[in-house]
Every structure is written in structure tokens, then in C-alpha cells.
Length: 120
Image (tube, rainbow, N blue to C red; front, side):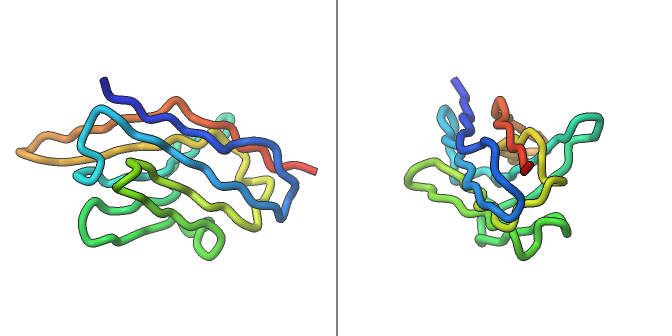
């Protein structure tokens, strides 16, 4: 069955770094755009970064530009989010997403989330 398993979250001080990982299984990883979303308490889930399936393009929410880097390893079925210069406002549950549109059908898979807390 399809699984997205995130890891790497935790408690970090402001200015610190974390690297999130998401290991995928049960589908053809390279066919899917891979993204990281986050949801803070009382807020809507927002897209943080996306890595396209083809072409290798990436996009980031403005607040993450210059601080976060998304990467993927199709051989390991894994997507990463390197987060540097973390701020308290980055505190959220971070979710991995796999997305594909084919034959007018949209497919989305989600992980269970990993908590990131930025606090002194």
C-alpha cells in the first residue's frame, strides 16, 4: 500500500537547522511532484516547497525562500527539506505530499506529519 513516512522533526532553537526526510513506497515515486506542507495551530495548511516530477524545478513559499531547500532522490524514493535559520513562526506540523495529475485524474498522497518546534 501507499506510504509516506516523514522523519527529522524536533525541537530546535531559533537560528538552528533541521533536515526533514520523507520515504515513499507503494507508487512510482519519480512520476509524482513531491511537496512539503505545514500546518500551524489554528491555521490552514500551507504549501512550503515543491519539487516537480519532471524537469527538476522547485518552488517555495516566500517565507521559506533563501532558508529552505527541497531535494529528492528518486533512487531512494525520498524527498528532503533542509531548513536553516529557523524562526519561531516556522513551528508547525510538516507534511509530505505526493501529487500527480494524469488522464484528468488528480492523485494526492499524504504522510502522517512530523512536528517542528522552534523555540528558545
